[in-house]
Length: 369
Ligand SMILES: *[C@@H]1O[C@H](CO)[C@@H](O)[C@H](O)[C@H]1NC(C)=O
Ligand SMILES: *[C@@H]1O[C@H](CO)[C@@H](O)[C@H](O)[C@H]1NC(C)=O
Ligand SMILES: *[C@@H]1O[C@H](CO)[C@@H](O)[C@H](O)[C@H]1NC(C)=O
Ligand SMILES: *[C@@H]1O[C@H](CO)[C@@H](O)[C@H](O)[C@H]1NC(C)=O
Image (cartoon, rainbow, N blue to C red; front, side, top):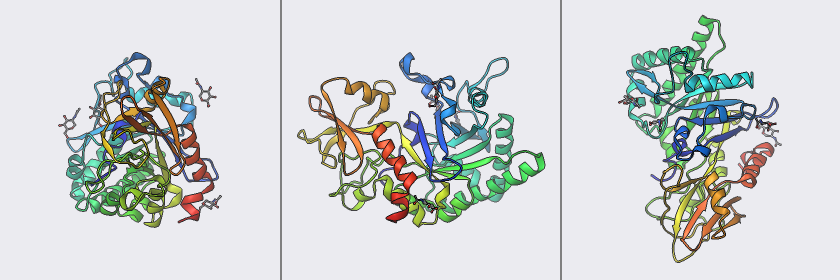
């Protein structure tokens, strides 16, 4: 399987915009527990650095699953008073934006699927897990939960549906019994064709959550048949010459696929990544879609292989060895360094505007469906 394998774990911060019109769009921001560990003090990122007025929702990523319930991952997620842990720091941003909702995400790429499979295999296990989860969320003042199961497969597909359905029901009865607002339920889901077909009962997933976070990035990886190509991380459209699998590796295709398979349009929230996927070029060819020599090196601040965060790309572009180009077919930029044979595909303000414009006018999601 290709694509879609390294989602939120590597993101610097994602902003998601829902297709909902009318009362305003959702602007969902992920805060990651590892951005506090970036190597340079000037770019370490803490809850205090979040401008809470830019987000309608903040999702804290991630919590672990242990002993049939949620557990903090980091030593400083939860601290004993008078110290203030990270969960509390993010929740305290509501002081700057009283309408802000803060959700806790559970899962992620590093946690993997085994803990989810363990707590969802039987009705009893799900019931125990969900009850504990609701208690944990209330105890730490969260407004809801984001399931980041990466990814359900053919065997766990129906368990994922059961987990969502029963969580939703539990959240309803819990709220009624406690006389509180219902906890919000969202799910972050794959956008690769293969992963979606194999892992989701799309209609049921949609019906049982408040919103769906489409992880519409990491389209850079192809299967063995196509080899490594200079693929954009999150192309809006496919290129003229993209065929087969390559033509499915874009945001437009992913949105249409989710809608066609039965997702409620107003629940879809489009993921936007503030990072790029890099490659080593072959014979100096920098054309998007061209054969690549290999994936690229790790970024200098994150140490994560094959990717550069957006702030590092901006820094690189100040160096005359780097040149930026606009990919007009795919509506995203790319940049290359011909001295070092490096190439990176990413998003910048222009491509983000293109994507948000598409959501606002429904161009693809509606008309070309
Ligand atoms: C943050 O959460 C992830 C789970 O996704 C965990 O593996 C990791 O150890 C945590 N901390 C850091 C510094 O990555
Ligand atoms: C937060 O964002 C708003 C909206 O863009 C802006 O007006 C405000 O100045 C920002 N606040 C800070 C502290 O940067
Ligand atoms: C996460 O939970 C698993 C058990 O499911 C445990 O083995 C692991 O140590 C936990 N990770 C952290 C960082 O607490
Ligand atoms: C966008 O889609 C919604 C839901 O189908 C529809 O009500 C609305 O009219 C569309 N907007 C535009 C500009 O096409």
